[in-house]
Image (cartoon, helix red, strand yellow):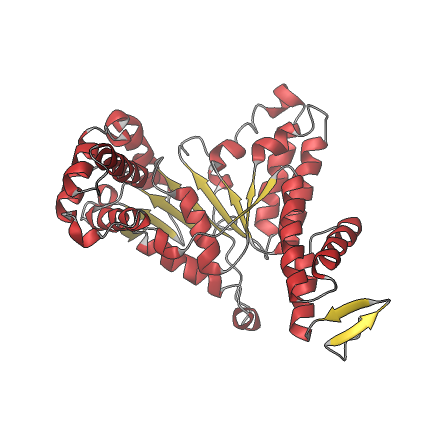
Length: 364
């Protein structure tokens, strides 16, 4: 490629790339093997009849397919930040984390954010938060399927360890966000590993935890539901910069969540009695609020193909028994765990039930 000219030909190949586009092209090829690079460039050249800005888009799409083919990593599209209701404190954490990866932070020798562990009750939008994190930080999100890692080798000793090394190597070259759902399940089984699989699980988990300790290029975003069995060294500061507990949304957060889901269905929130909906949905998770809006819209459609009204959503709310009621004892045990274990720099607890003063977030 002629680096002194935007437009050039080499061996009959039309090259139309600015210097900035060349840098984007190199970035797009990071994490691919030599053979994979040849394949994706060939497809891009055929599709765009040369190398140009359109080629980079094609290469990025092909790269997603390569990542998908790894079996344990999935590229996840970002979610606009305005699709997440509430979470004021988490948004601030994500913006703070994004700054630590900037050139200015590097020049000041600021250590990049290690990662965020989002602990909370089921249905409170933790996986949505991962996708929003990708949007706020402007970093690609790769989801790690730890179950696939452990199952890839079919019981062959050493295969799972090789799989995790390959997945983390790809994540390291892309330098985005590595998402790990149900972190507590991913790192469980270390103690029994020697008896059950010759130590394969323990070695694989140890590699992941050590990588998290040493990693400086990837923002780890892990989520967890029931974390009572986690060992303290698995979530200590050094592996995570922030540990954030998410409880049920408070009233003002439920208001925002209702607005988000009404807007998604092209309904004007000002035409609804939002105060009534918020009052009726005490102890509802974000997922349950979404379900109430969805069911209310369906009820109105069936009842004469009309637009949903407050009464339809109220009826849907009254037909839902929230998880917080059905599993109250288990949920209180998780809250107790959060009180006792989420401490230290960057630790936050989200919910008035924990702080006792009506404030959703407190620094511990």
